[in-house]
Length: 416
Length: 160
Image (cartoon, rainbow over the protein chains, first blue to last red):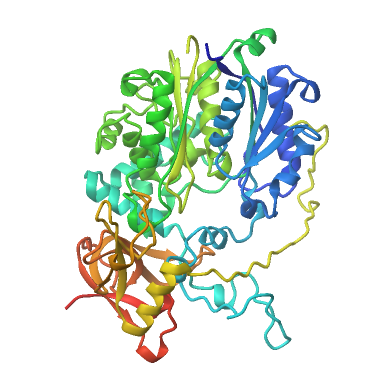
């Protein structure tokens, strides 16, 4: 019989819109220390493998994996970095433990996005360089390889100067997709505005959240169109923070005297990178969920999932993802919202943590923020935002603009 | 946090300001070269038909992403530089989160006679009207100025 995988420890740093006083290494160290303490283990003896999730470009390093062992206790130990969301890290740890070769695995992901002065430009670099990037605006690059020579008369352009001006921000893709979602489902801009108000209000009860706000859907509707129909308050603002998970086999959890909390399923899926052949319907989430549901023996997700944390980095994404995850029928998300079903007391409490709209967009750590909320809820430690009788929870994350990829993880309190 | 003492003087944190030079030559590849040389010289688009599923792949590619089969030589087809608006948005901000000079309509255009679409700038004023399905055609640079890149497509204009 295949062994079961448990979450035995979680830890996280403070979450702030900027963190100029602390280095990314110190932030990771803090989150990992907390997770090891939570699990009651000695990292230098008890952890068999280490997984961090980070993206070279966001971090500002080439070969970022070289920069991680010391601050997580992994020097001269099996260590790897996944260029993807933290949920992919959890999935990889899950598989490592399932093999029976390893018992205890650390997974870490973080955002230190405020260190990056040009996130929009870096995100443009994620678009196809031949067909898509040139369409985003004027580019006058040297027509040769190698370093251009700069002179006194023609100095190196400063950030945002000359040739880099007037290139459209890649979030235009979210605006396009929202327009498509509204048109094909009959969901309204008001519904999306309600999602923002719901999540930012929920964030008041989450001490980790950095973007709680006492706002209404009307306030959101009154905010500026940035990528019409997407408005400024419908975009999750950037936040810095680190999150760490310790996963272990069930036997190991019992040896440590930890009440097992199971990771019972995981799925992931990548759609085509070509904008022109995508469906823009969250199909990646649907397929990832199907894989995770099968692994967890969840036949009727709408009835069986007690709490969901889904990617809401843009307001409409919460509804689109709920539908893709089969937690709502196509186009039904808005109705569930109107009926209060997505609230803490509803039938499918969604993003009670405040989601990315309330907590902030923590980039590669987004999936772990969702998973952390599920763990805290299933442990019954969520305080005023605690969902009653939460037994099975789902965490879902998308890879972000301009991707069409993502992962789903299922957690269960007992049995599994 | 785990440290006994933290920085408490907001004027104290220091940093090193770094940057990254990253210049590339991105090859168009076989299919891309043929597509762009044709655009430059003939002012039309090229697509390829999958021999297995018959989908017309656009922009032209050497393999079908659904069937994972190669496209034979005689499955290359020429298609017009026109189509209909599939997705669009009016973008107001540049990559530095600064306002664009004027709102720009970014659109994904379904190209006529194909199963694919292409990203373009739509030459329209901001409107509340639904532009989905609007017939449009590409405005190309004059032949002499074409260089065989996406820059040869100045924008898409509503068909008259």
